[in-house]
Length: 202
Ligand code: SF4
Ligand code: SF4
Image (tube, helix red, strand yellow):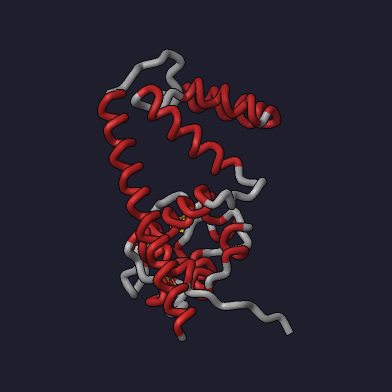
């Protein structure tokens, strides 16, 4: 018989990070039935919620589901418990990146980082740089880009020339988000310490 060690730590960290209570989920699976990604992956939103409730880090972070989540919020809209599941997915991405738990087969995770760096550098996303950096990291992606690039260019999704955005405003946003993340991490560390202290006393 397979057994697993149950831990409240992941649900606590998610709760401290984004304010959502994963324990409210009662596995109705309405989130999963509307999720556009679920049919392509081993895990699905309801499974992720259950794994969070049980503190199964490997189930959540060894799978690529959270990195394929598009943030469309269909799950959030459908949840009868009012859980913002999309926010939980985002929080799990933050935890995975912070703890170095991004699986190898997730180019979408690397692409999100390239997007972020591009916004920080130029005040907006510069697609040409993004594609060049992706090609350097993943030379095999050349086939996809050769097929996608011209279509995106025809639809005006790729601008070959750099148009800077408001880099100062972007720097302020980054500083604000970094201070929010630092405060979250402190709250999570405090919560973990309180839980450890309570465990030691019992
Ligand atoms: S819709 Fe809400 S309650 Fe139902 S399985 Fe998904 S998260 Fe849980
Ligand atoms: S936000 Fe993510 S998990 Fe929710 S329905 Fe959209 S793709 Fe699926």
